[in-house]
Length: 368
Ligand code: GDP
Image 1 (cartoon, rainbow, N blue to C red):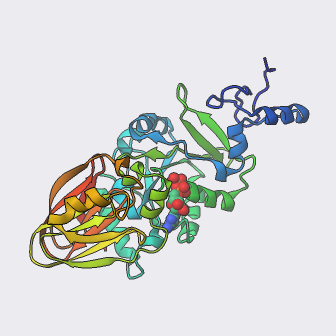
Image 2: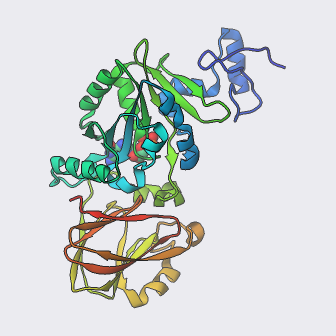
Image 3: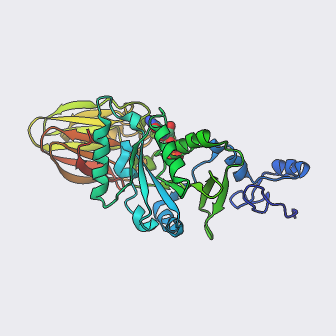
């Protein structure tokens, strides 16, 4: 029924009936557009105010399949964003396979969360080794804090350098801070207005957001990838606020005897099965309850208190059933739980870890 007006942002035909389809604009905005004689679809209108871009979250498999677009771009250069607090949960091991081995740099965000005592040089080589072990060879490793501004200048410099000859693609899972990083870049390198165009992947709703930074090259933001391995995937907004640290992590230590259990609120539990008295140090959000109990009482405690004293989760039935893993942890190793943080011990121990089915963990050389 409408005239065939096109969105001046993305070129889609303007329509007012289907919010989920390209070109949608609310009726009121449509009428304003008629008087002005120009139309933005709702999405492009929001893109002009980049803060409002909500992640186009997509499942990992679906996303990775689309990355061959990057593989086909002769001039592609990739910024792989990871979360230093959740390296295993946020790194994309399949990246090279799907992008055809394009050159990339590793941007490890949220460095402000690490305790002050941490030496950044050590973290950098630790990260590099972790990546090499996965056969991933970043050209550079940038330790960043989008929140505190640390190393943003360095990042901007790299962008200014690479953009001369490359299109830069930013990839990362949800919550690594990709929007925060891009916001900074936009502030530094240009106004959001008129800078953003979107390009839909043919045949999908998946969109890459292009920010043309020079005549010939663009910074291209790809959708956030949902990771079902991360505990945050199973939580509501309130739960996520507890689990995602917002401040520098204060490590919490417990002297534990075998037969004792620590609950990560109601999200999982760690049973100390065998070993001498040991110091366990937890690096998790300061807001997350770590509750110590006797292992023999733990089942009952969980049954009685999950969703209440042991919260998050907000309710008992919010999580998949727990699954048990038996783990040998050596001194100077971390046990990292995707999205939750990590724990380290000062001598070898036998542990049993219970996590909601689907949430993953990794044993790794100690970061700190
Ligand atoms: P995206 O999903 O990757 O786009 O991530 P967002 O930019 O929306 O950030 C996800 C969460 O991480 C938000 O709560 C941010 O405030 C937080 N965040 C982003 N960057 C940093 C950082 O450098 N340090 C800390 N501590 N938090 C950050």
